Amino acid sequence: MYVLAIDQGTTGTTTVLYEESGAPVAKAYREFRQIFPKPGWVEHDPLEIWKTVQETVAEICTPERAKRIAALGITNQRETTVMWDKKTGTPVHNAIVWQCRRTADQCARLKQHEPFIRERTGLPVDAYFSGTKIQWILDAIGGYQEGLLFGTIDTWLVWKLTGGKTHATDFTNASRTMLFNIHAKKWDQELCDLMNIFPALLPQVKKSIDDYGIVESLPQIRGAPVFGVAGDQQAALFGQTCFEKGSIKNTYGTGCFAVMNTGDVPVHSTKGLITTLAVNGKGNPCYALEGSIFIAGAAIQWLRDELKLLNTASESEAAARAVENTNGVYLVPAFVGLGAPHWNMEARGILAGLTRGANRNHIIRAALESMAYQTLDVLEAMERETAIAVKSLAVDGGASANDFLMQFQADILGKSVVRPTVIESTSLGAAYLAGLKAGVWKTHEALFAHKSIDRVFVPAMKNRTRAALVSGWRRALRQAVTV
Image (cartoon, rainbow, N blue to C red; front, top):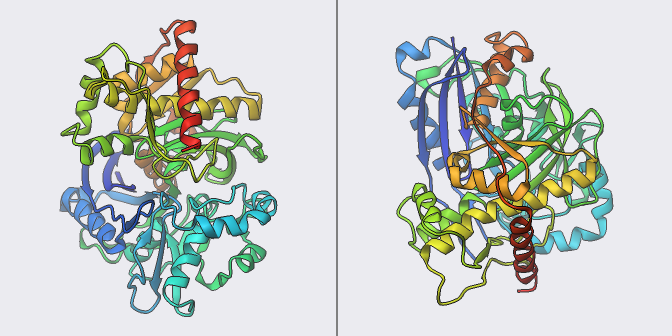
């Protein structure tokens, strides 16, 4: 038996077919356009995203494979907001991406309500989340809400896959909207009123392991049940089998996201972290602390696409190893502000410490190192918040394949970094969710048998060197905030 996982990410869609051992059998990937209408604004075309799903499924789901598919799981870039016409299924606007800062002014007006919003949702008031994005789209189309539906990307894909029969999301995605009460585990009428959003727009909220309907719109897999849905970071936490309180993973993708399972009781952060919902081993919602870093791998894409310092992202490791250090250069990639633990919308990206001796390789190395420094800031906040000493960090995501970055991460944390054999933990988590419902795996304990470690990176940096590097990072960070 196989389980199909659709991993709809910020820059592309990856569809993976997994067998019962948890090993990938086939994989297909398609990028899609990043649309930047104005500085700080980011959009996607929802129909283009749907096309990448169609193409990747068609590529790997041969007739022989398709008849062995037990279930389909979906994981997705969270917060990204889609609005469409209920009758026609046509989007009324491009999707507003989680990175987009266009609603900063709306957030400023909501700041007076932040204690109330944070208490109900676990989230700070920030343009990152869906609530103000919904407001913005409604204003842009004239304010009418009748006959429209809202969804994060998971909801949009479930709607498309089921031929418009299911308008639903899961707890993890709902918890990222700034409209969902994470204690009552339902849409909050007062929050909807505060943002002038009709609850009729909002999808039904289901468990991550649940029946989301039958695929009707893709001929290759017509009839396959959609049995699992979770936001990308919660799916990765599940894929890493972080079922115990205090277990933590960090995903290195377009952004960087550290998530710690905090069990059945929410930890309300005072250190710039997000209190959110995750999935426990039985598929029920549990609580987690998250540190959301907006720009990680996207900094390498910037070096490749805008500065033309790289032809491919994979070249970055060799470039970083070509120099002994960054020659004092720090990149603070605050291209869309700073996320956790700083939450500063006005911060902007800077290259600090430039001299005439700085070259291409120094800048590339600084970009890679910036991911590790930002992760350090988040993990230190988590340790202060929970009084749990993190002994090791489970890692995944595309950039975790970079040995230089993983070793530097271990060095700058002073902790071991554990990389699994399958670094696509996000799609694996979606497969696990769907497969548990379908009976491919009987219990969540059975998933531990499939966990395979590729490499453990052990810290090798002297404490004095680490302290000096971190001090330089903190100076650069202060400069980015005052730009």
